[in-house]
Length: 516
Image (tube, rainbow, N blue to C red; front, side, top):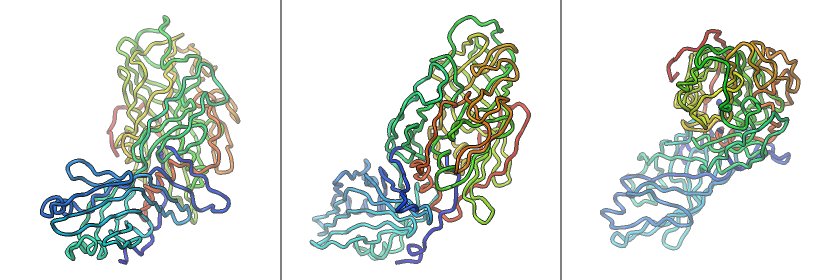
């Protein structure tokens, strides 16, 4: 076995955001390990080998037991991966169902690969190999260069693989790239709430992807599959539709925003991962931003910007910041991420969510974190207030980079909600109309809308709001399947991690770059 396969990879901390199904609960009997399930492994062995088998050898590949082959003599996918994530060593170990028969009558060979396994600590792929009526178990087929995302990882064929494939020239040769992901599944859209509530409006179970399956969320993979919270993440309001009713408003059709709040949880599984999962850290809202009780969503207050209800456009910037910190070791942190100066741009039902991001001492302003999509293209106001709930947010490429590659582009984040006042005397849904509004009194809040709070591994202290996710219940103490699934995907490489320093901008957000 090569040194690469023998060497355990230290899994450093990385920024999570898992964006699925399969709860990862750590039991008291084995606090370090958490189960993983519903993964898939895709690997083509080696493209030139596949061409040889189906070409010169006039042979065939026959997947079985749920395994499949991509069209055009492509790579193979082995399903139903299950195994464990070790939060102490950060090792991911998975075994997969299905088998692959490789045969050529012309060249006189027939072999079967089964029980394919991936071990991030050993950095290798193994399989049981049956040939000539004899089965050899756990034959190392390839060394793997494990990456942050566990996608398109480089592989190098072993001496044992060369023997299995029938040519000494394969030893040390580059194999096909390897991808290990959790199987995506359909999302569940959160139900709109008619009135502010202290409990989630619905209970949803997770889907088959690396996300938590707590009673408060339904989500999918950090590798890019959708994820959404079943609890409202936006401002609580009296409207049960994505936009306010079409009643007449006293405000002009276009003008300056007087005030408003943005409600967003970033990603429920990420919050759970930071506070109750492997990161064992804390979340701190500041600068007027607040967090709902039970490690809930965040409210960013004091909106400014412009609107045009005729053109259905809106540009708003919000104050406050939120810091995620965890994976402490000797006084330093492997996770220290701050988002501030959040902004929303909407045009005809679509748009973008931006924020300032500080990472590794480098400040990046106006990073486009997510693409937004509302349920209605119309921006209508009721009583001089435009309210949008359940706005879909999908991670952009720049957003994925901002989160250190923990999630892939297209991952669905928590839904966004916002309420903006079009006049100084307009009443925001939380209660305190006018320019001083924007933060209702949630658990622990002083109602001022300006106090900060911290959520740590042992509970929540400080102020929170009911305005943007005050209805969210506690995520509980179970480890997040999504975050650990993503952690398995993002921190399996030694030295992985993102260190982000906190910084705030007070100016109104202009249109900026879409990458870091």
